[in-house]
Length: 195
Image (cartoon, rainbow, N blue to C red; front, side, top):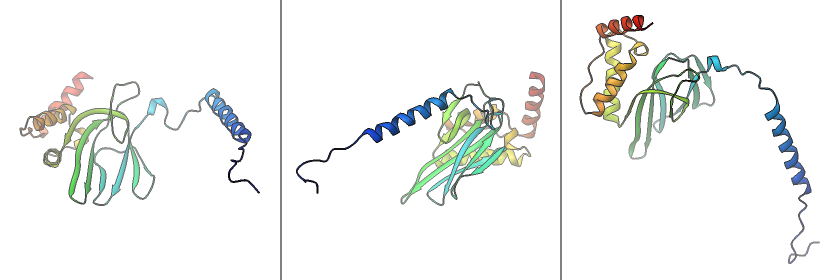
């Protein structure tokens, strides 16, 4: 029976042996040749983590051509986009008193080696064409997306410069110009010329 006034001696030898084995395993992993993953550097995709907790936390893609879709849990999934793809990522959060966060980002997925800006829930990041916060401004962006669709243009194909224009006009408190089919044809011709 142990004496309560005298602490027991703890044998750390088993613990230190486990630490030594763990360090040896980590060193082996670092020295081992890298096996190419399914997502090689040539086809690296931009991943966006989406979460949906009804009326509390809602992340969704408003538009974008999804290359891959992985379900992680009942409330979480990860969607992936190929380099050059433009997508709209909406984040909304509420508590018992109402909306806390309302944001929309229109992002161009980047290729490996291209510079990018980090963005929450987007790995590795992207070329942010538009970033708007607060519900009145987000609703203006959603209206601009709806207007492009009403003109018969898929928002994924809209010129990146138009989304920058929408961002700047909303930031200045002005109404953005609508994206028309004529503007879209001009963009397609410019893209042809630039090669």
